[in-house]
Amino acid sequence: TLKKWYDLAVRLDRQWRQAVAEKKTFAARSRKGETGSNTDPNAMDVDRTRSQKRCYNCGQAGHFARNC
Image (cartoon, rainbow, N blue to C red; front, side, top):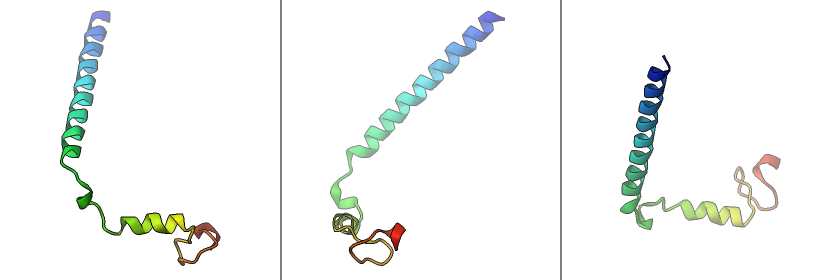
């Protein structure tokens, strides 16, 4: 009946909203203690290579990996 469909929709909506709220609180808790010291020490090399427009395959300047 229509009443059962309505009750089911309300219950699913509540479950979905609760799941979204829990996801947000978990993400906030996990990001809270992060610092820059936990990151990959080689991560800066990627940015440096990208800023110099070097190929990721061979490392030479002047072309990109898709043209290597």
